[in-house]
Image (cartoon, rainbow, N blue to C red):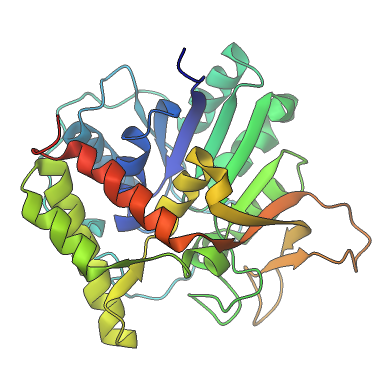
Length: 320
């Protein structure tokens, strides 16, 4: 008898690492993916929804697993982010995927997520790979459904490491810190995969080249996207490898034992001139607040590399 699959909803802002995360998720039999929700983040909402639909089509996701458009911006202030093409043209490293032919879902991501939780309370894990705008809106407008969420696994924050947008803040939390703080304080079980862990699990150029040479549509696209990130990171650091942040969050849902977890009381700074968007993780209970999250501080990098590469190879022409 095969083990039970974990029902999940993926909220994302594709984004190269979101794309790789989706490839990993749909190649992982441990997950039962009900749908993909799009949120503004790495790209605007129109591009995020379109990229998600194109990626779903490339993977071969059936239309019974919808791609649902969500919020176009943060819950509070206007977002101000560096004008830096981290993810390249179109948000996918210049990889031009065929236009999606599936009809757009008519609903809003927040309403759709609420419907799924109502139908199957206590079953769904939410995997959040972008700013937490959609998730915060769900938990705010439907507080009665907080207990219906099994767990939230998210990529975001920098607990004890430097940020990647400001010295203190990571992109997803900086993009909508009010949403991140709200989610952290709802009491929903929370696993946070911050930069502390993702920077310890680098994908080398060799793996990108291996995938690109394969020639199958998904593996080739994944290889080209990863090569874009590796080349960008190499130009800045001299290291021919890159962190695939969101893929590690999916791995945390698939095989949580790949990561080292620390229990902490967490919140997100929303007002600091230099610290807005910073993840504050109190592992020693200095604040006296109850611990409300598991924070990933380490990872078995070799095991993650093997998991990612082996799962992506399931799309290969050489594999049945």
